[in-house]
Length: 80
Image 1 (tube, rainbow, N blue to C red):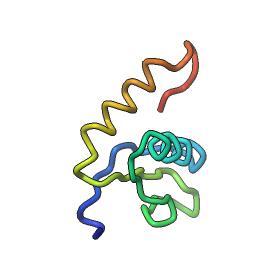
Image 2 (cartoon, rainbow, N blue to C red):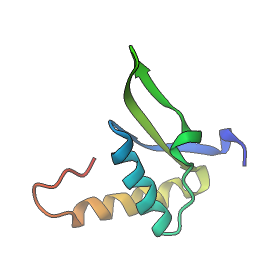
Image 3 (cartoon, one colour):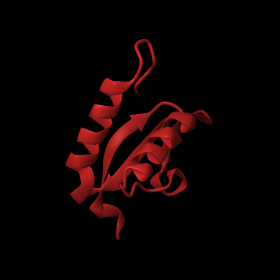
């Protein structure tokens, strides 16, 4: 698949947060890009945004999955 067939589903502040999102998506049967191929933003050498990308045809169902996952998270636990 080419890069233009992927859409950003989430922008995380840390690599750990983005990795957790990627792992959850993969465990649910989705096909997100690896973080090292998805790119990230940095300012002055500090990483500030990690984009999680999924195939565009999976975008809506992956969004619904993440939404359901966030609703099921224990109270007080960060969800994004």
